[in-house]
Image (cartoon, rainbow, N blue to C red; front, top):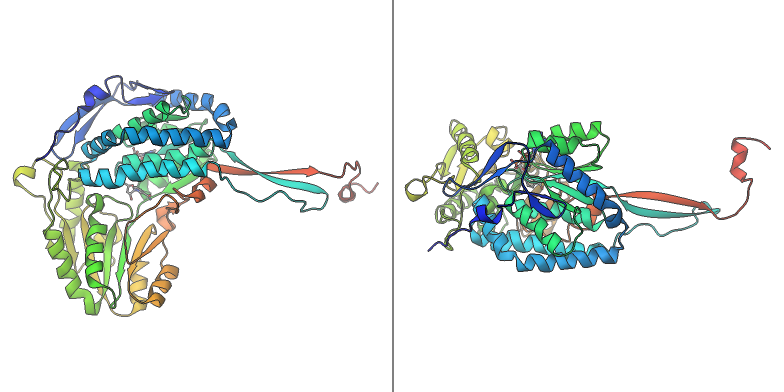
Length: 504
Ligand code: NAD
């Protein structure tokens, strides 16, 4: 029996922008509807942020910067521990809001999105006190060289709709832990949990203006934020196509840039793999978040002896899943984020039918689910390596499977797309998994698993999947700049090296 989703219209009656420590309405004059993708019904209508709201948010972040950047690491750490406690108190509200705006089954929001985001806060509360660098030393003999690790200033962040809360955490935490202030623009389709996250930060005592949220469209509020002269760094997560546009503007402004872009993760199964583990791993890895995951397993390559058994195991398991209402505890898979996106996924599968076989799924369910943005778990075989469905992001519950013979061939196929975000390899042979770990060109290679992420380890892409790292202490490399302070320690007026300029 499904429970009732929350009334978010009442919750955001004051407005859906978060500037300088409070909710307020946007001023663009244009309105946006947040839709429950499970029903197609509107749950919130709000006024979008426009350039003037972005300007106000950047001003708020600039005002907050000197005190926050000047706070001791211990003070920032304390504030972030209080932030974690505030989020613990709001966890169930976040679970429901995330499920409502994205269509995620409650089980996914409750066991993955929300605890993962809160753990990120806990990690950065500790990490705020560990901004490491070289120890000071007399490298020249006559000077003491020290390295200062300093915040950059105001960070402009842009996030996608697939994991709104986790993306807010990944963007905000390393930035503010390192002493920056931030203006985050979530996707206009999914603003709810980013706003709640910022409210919790204020409740925890983070000063007004340290965390600001502008909810507007990409070409309007997003582009203005990226080009804003007050923004020192742009941190973007989204598609490779939009990332390229963002990169051009940020580069023109000589801004620090961090890009987390699309993915097309291979799932490489050697003939000595545990078949049951590989089948379950492939279905879970392909279907998590209804496949709207940048690291989702999208292309399985299976060595010939296991190929037939793998295909039938995956097809049977996919067909056994319960697709339905996100608020029903028995639901395994919810809808896609919107009807528009569902139709895009369906069109890619339909185009593939001309040359490939749809083994299971390949359509939207009817009956009680007909009004929602649903699409059945889909398995495709026989797709050519250079086809659209193998080379490009589908971002839906769709897995292709292809056979291979020699290990070299499997590894070459795994590397054969422009992307490089994540991959997995399945084998009991440490030499095969070790080789795959070295040779697959991706920011993360899982061995005998696919998807788990942890706050302590870096997440980020190679090649067209972008550059820079989210999470972990590595993310501080993005959100800080290193200054060399070199002090003469001789007190001598006429230094030896002056002879290179004047002889006397
Ligand atoms: P998208 O690229 O369409 O939009 C991402 C964000 O950019 C949104 O907030 C959007 O409003 C904004 N935007 C759009 N045009 C803009 C512009 N001209 N200037 C500034 N901002 C602009 O992506 P999406 O459809 O929201 O999300 C899905 C994509 O995100 C997929 O490609 C997925 O792989 C990627 N993603 C990557 C990671 C990662 O860690 N690498 C994580 C999650 C999602």
